[in-house]
Length: 128
Image 1 (cartoon, rainbow, N blue to C red):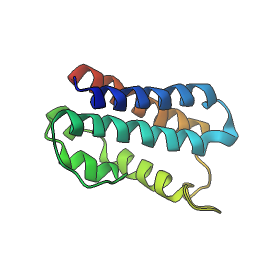
Image 2 (image 1 turned 180 degrees about the horizontal axis):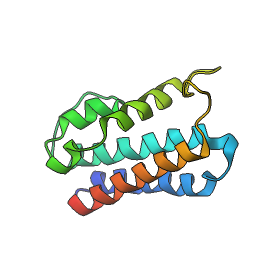
Image 3 (image 1 turned 30 degrees about the horizontal axis):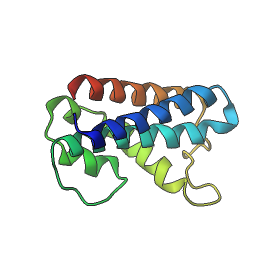
Image 4 (image 1 turned 135 degrees about the vertical axis):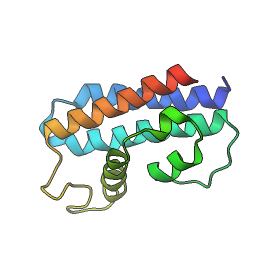
């Protein structure tokens, strides 16, 4: 494994560690969504790094996913990727951006984001 690939995975693990520390705090559910998006993004970038694929700089999970030619990653839930994209990108702006149509993500939403990110990291480690 390339050093940069390992760096991406260490950083993705730090996002999971952050999620674990804050997951049960209802007022931090948007932060859980942010770190879940970041974890998945870093996993996808680890695959890109390891495969020597050139991709423009982006945080868009769907764009990153399409750059990777790996069957198991191609099966990633695109609805979840789209939702995490929206929550991540919009969370960088003030006000109600970065929220679901019903407001801040619920604890249940945050747990789903967390589980998805953990699954992606575990799959990435297994495949790389």
